[in-house]
Length: 308
Image (tube, rainbow, N blue to C red; front, side, top):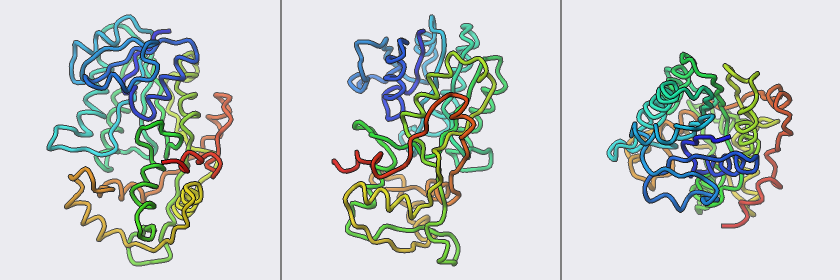
């Protein structure tokens, strides 16, 4: 099967590309000029150079494929550079959905996120709008909404590695964020970390599963962990003995609001908002349906953090 993959050079995209190849599919990738060297096993892929805002390049990428995976996403936006959630999460997905409909490629799989909603952060609302647009199409669609994705980044950007480098690597206590004035809530928000290998299996297995058409799957690991437990696991896997301290979030949000346009500032106001909302889900039924054994968020499975 030829599969158009949009967003094939990042953390998740690298695993999706490998999973496609390992299952005898041919990835057809749209890659920005200058990023060709980021493609894993490039000689086994079909590569088109261009941008997700370019209709012709999108048509060239989708033409003659059997399915489309839209996996392009931003962790943070930089409006001054024209890099926005609106352009990437919604407009790019919309253009690919419209093009697939026009050309007649029916199978479309979308990478969304757990917790998306219309009246949320820009990240959440633009992901939600893409979900709704696909749901209202005539395509044979499936939407995946993962919680926190972890795993060996292979040189890409990944949450646990970034947290290790940006927070735990500093000579300061790790912040236990909390909203309001109740210090007992510090670090109590929870997530359902899901391993990247599991996520990539869901995407590729569902290509041939007609029973997944028209369904949304929230993907989380087998257990929920609060922020304190996540910090402790990452610290232990990184061989760091990290002190922790309660951190009221409002002053940090204010600093982020003023400085998050700077690439080196480690967190944005919206990221803090989403962090404190928590991000959990029960995916046991999905794992059973796809016959996937979930990977635990354990120190052993975080061993990649022990190397720089």
